[in-house]
Length: 202
Image (tube, rainbow, N blue to C red; front, side, top):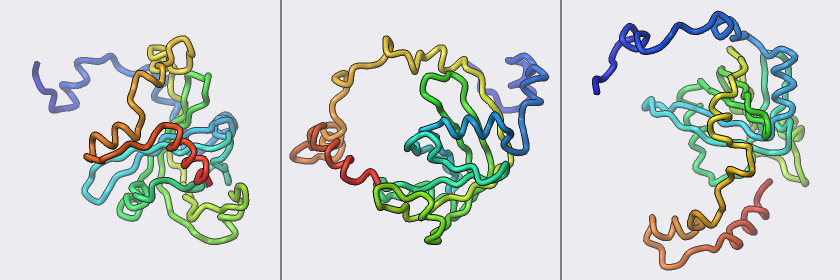
């Protein structure tokens, strides 16, 4: 197998993109993009650190948790997580951000690329208060590109088809995996982990 090292070599392996695929990239969020964001309960967020290494993390909440401020601006609350702050630390060094919005049951996705700033003002955080709890920070994303992505990956994977879901018992619990990876003496059970998560969702 030969390593491909140039664009010319790469292009010989693929057909040219269809004109529609080239023209569909928008400089802002149109009505359809805004509607898609409003229906999405889950977005995958890609960022890049000072060392150039990439990182992808999920963000999720009730549909529409990402607010469309205007066609060029998205607001994303940072709900409690593991406090590693990988994405936020990356954004301090490199504001570039890639977003992939998902809507369960819909095979198409929405891709948004742009830059992000981290904000912590109280008035902004108050807009995203849930159960009396406000996010510590909110991302203000400036949209540079937005486009709908075709359904082929989700069609091939049957990602939303319950008939193809993997039984949870096919994997050890996260507690058991962390016990083995970290050499811990005991493992948190799946029930214990879920109870702890529910207490700290917001």
